[in-house]
Image 1 (cartoon, rainbow, N blue to C red):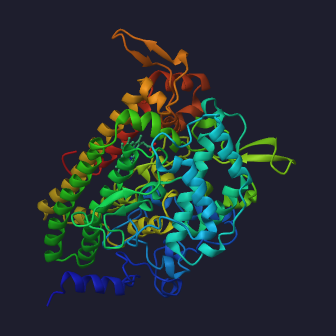
Image 2 (cartoon, rainbow, N blue to C red):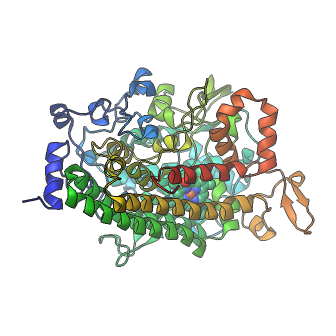
Length: 591
Ligand code: HEM
């Protein structure tokens, strides 16, 4: 008799390399199990753990060239991300992917650290103006409140993270609190408006504990999607199982502005993640069927892929729902500037210097996440009144491009976002690859696991294409839905970024804390309205850098600069279109 889906799954798990863990949807294996089984070369389970090692990985262990890939099964952009997961602790024995909440942690997010860390929580509460709209720190303001607060951070004691080590939810909260403090510290700084030529020093009170927490979670020392979304949301009943219908996520814990708009912005992504849980279940069931690959399996797989298309459409609609509570101008002028990273002035960014931390710790931690190859350096007097070089680290600010859910859909359906290599040049790491380094390590490991499954869905569909037109149609249907999701997302990015970048903030927004653009950057155009004509957004800088890096190697610097100023967001749309087109190009028929 043919085994049921569950039996097939159990058999696959036994035959391949996984065992079920408590709530893990896709279970990982222990190092001892890994060594007992024949893993494909370069499989992440065959690599020594790196991100949680007490000392930074050596230069050789962090070169991408070390990772051999199987052209057939590995999504190339994942192959470029080489950090092996930490399989040495129980906390990460699974991929932190829960059957009920997907990439969102099942356990309620901690909303306050233990009393020993009260000074951090109090600093955050003060920065947020005790949760009152308009009372928090201002963007780039040199007011009394901001000066006092930053001085307080400069003088805050450097706390050990020892007492947090036994609790994963508390470690996550520590990353949330410290990275919000970091961004409050950086962006309330009066030099925000003018690009810095020297790295901005980050006091040891933030740097030291943050850089101790980061390797334990496998996150970089900057605000990430995990901080704003995954670890920052509560359902109606925080201690009951979250559920889309019965116990939806309704509360976002920390924000910069305390506005309902910011909470809605985060919660829109939380809802996408929760809606995506069913997509993850379908992926697991599909891979079980791919293992069996008999006639009944192929029929089931056809159904699963059509179901997946419906879920992807739902996630796309939830992205559009961001409009039902987050005003685009409030987002662009009041919320988004807080997100900027140390790379936000483009290739010339001076970055942020993490004081009190061994340079090797900072760079060994997650340099693959950084933008640009080399940190900038400068001689400066630091708090220790010693002349020492400051190394500016250039990490990027948070983006839903760090959502493991969307990456998982790409990997499962084999959508390739690797930049096309031009002859005579070296392929550069893409935005999508770099975003892997901004995900919690277990999620990154999960994606690597998904990319190395022995029976990828695409191969199965291709092999059976002639006999199974319905299967091909279902696979293409899922891709078409993902393409539609990206089109919806492009509408949102256009509304919230491109259109807003062209309008200066209203007086009302300026009163609420938006930074007025320099007069030289606004002009009254034919419609009698003020327009921003020269605002190179950090984002277009970033995207331009991503997309045009190869071209820039061959072109004059000035020409590149002209392009940023002239287009004001064209590069962003070009990038998002490229992601959409990569999705469409994966279709087997009727592209
Ligand atoms: C107001 C809401 C949103 C805005 C303004 C927005 C804007 C952007 C921008 C500007 C990018 C370009 C890369 C970057 O710098 O981050 C981007 C990329 C991306 N965003 Fe969003 N986004 C929004 C909501 C979402 C949501 C809710 C999701 C899904 C959870 C999402 C998923 C992605 C993904 C996956 C990328 C990478 C490009 C791609 O795969 O097509 N975004 N977004």
